[in-house]
Length: 452
Image (cartoon, rainbow, N blue to C red; front, side):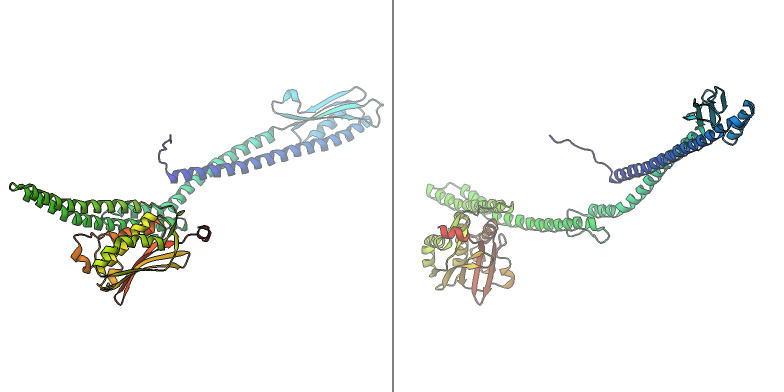
C-alpha cells in the first residue's frame, strides 16, 4: 500500500538545504580555524616552557657563586619579571628549596607544567629538581572568545546564506510561476493555445515541448472525437428513424402475418446495419487503444488473396469485372485480420470499378523489409482532397453517396487500423482514373520463409 505524502514547497526546501549546507561549510571552516589556533597556542606554550627551562638550568648552575639564598631568590624573581603567567619551584642539590611566581595552589586557572632535573657546577653529585608552571588562563580566554566569534559567524553566515538563497531561489522559480500562469490560462474548450517556452531555462524546455505536443495530440483527438460523434449520430439516426417509422406504421392498423413479416424483415436489415456499425466501432476502439497483433505468424499473401477472391467471384461476375492477383510476398501477422483488410479493399474497389474493367490485387516486396498489399481498380478518379481522406471514419467520396445506405464508410478506416495493429501503414493514390489503395506490412524474416 502506497503512502500518501503531503505537497511541499520547493522554494522552502531548496532554501533550507542551502542554509544547512552553508552552515556545515562555515562550521567546518570555523572548526578548522579554532583547532589551528588552539594548536598554535599550545605549541607556543610548550616552546616558552622549554626556553625557560634552559634559562633556569643555566641560572641554577651559577647558584654557588651567589653569597646567600636571599640573592638567589632575588635572582629568581628578576627572572620571572614580565612573565606573570609563569611560576617555579626549585630544590637545589644541597637541599635548599625555593619558589616564585604562579603556583598551582594559588591559581584557579588551568596550569601547564614541566619537570626537569638540574646539576650545578658547584654542587655535589646529587642532582636537584625543578618544576616550571604556566598559567594558560589568557590563552583559554582567547580560545573562548574565538569560539564565540566563530560560532556567531557560522550561524550568522548560515542565516544570511538562507536569506540570500531564498531570494535567489524565488528569482530562479519566477519562470516556473510564469509557466504555471500559462497553464492556468488554458481552457478545455480551446486547446489550440500553446505554452511559450522562450523565457524558460534549458532544463524546462523539454517539459514545455512535451506539454505542447500533448496539447496538440489532445486537440487532434478532441476534434476527431467530435467529428466521430457527429458521424456516429448521423449514421445511427437514419436506421433508428426508419425503425421508429416502420414500427409506427405497423401499429397504425391491424395487419396480416405476411405484412408483419415484411415489416420485421425490413427492421432486421436496419438492425443488422446498426450492429455492423457498432461492431466496427468497437474494433476501431481496440485499435485506438494501441492493441498490437503478434508478429510470429507467417502469412502468404498470395494464398490469402486467393481465399478472399473465392468469396468475391459471384460479385465480380455480376459487376462484369475481372479480378486477378499479381505478385507474391510473405508477411508476419494475423491471417484473419489480413483477410478482413483485403476483403474491405476488394469491396471498395468493386463498388467503384468501371463495369468491364479489371481489378488487380498487387503483392510485392517493398523497401525497409516491408511488403505491399494493394487493390487497384479503374473508375472515376479521386480528387486530391478525397485521396487524403479515404481512411477517415464515415468518409465516403461523392461518387459513393449513392450506396451510402448499405456502406457506412468504416471499411477503409478498419484497413488503416489493421495496418497499425501490424506495425504497418496505409497509402492511397489515384492517377488517370486508376485508383490504388493498400497497406505496407512487415515482411516475414528470411529464415522463417526458408523454414517454411
